[in-house]
Length: 281
Image (cartoon, rainbow, N blue to C red; front, top):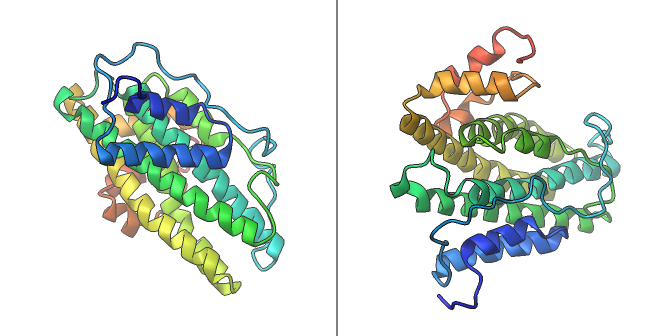
């Protein structure tokens, strides 16, 4: 590669350091293109300094506590905008989650050295998907007369990232295997409600996201099992322990077992955590 050009890690780090949402998404997609073109490489040795605890953020949307974001019926335009804005915020955070996974854990000793480049490639591709999703939702918001940043949002997703920043197994257990998996549970209902409201365009976008997210959960499960195997841990038992330690919200049914099965995420992982009905601590 050109010695004056940024390597892939520097490009990925720049995604995290970009506050503007559209620019962040464009930077994420550029990393994936460079990876595919082979015109950049990952650094060796891997720099010792990790990414900042928090990625760069725009001034808007206003941050509010979870539960304080607007909720309106999807039969109204305002309700559909509120839903799409919440999804845009999730996808915006998901870009950073994927790129933080690559930059923060790219040289983690929990990974098999022979599989390291596969790990990095997988999470860059996930980040590319999230950037594409963000663009689709942001464009739809603008078509409906709004924009990302116009409504308040919460930082629950990134709170989960902060708590797992020192443990790759924990990050894999919580980000793709709790938070993204929850998206598989709730998205089909949102698609149905949007179709019932006559907003087939928004419903179609959510179908694209839903299909891709099955693959993201599968990616998370594959790497979680890999990390557990390297450590000599039983994956199911390790998942139970990590969720109880790091996820305070509890796993709430109903679960979309069909989509989770497609993602190779067996019910034995998550059903025991919901069986008591009590908060996990």
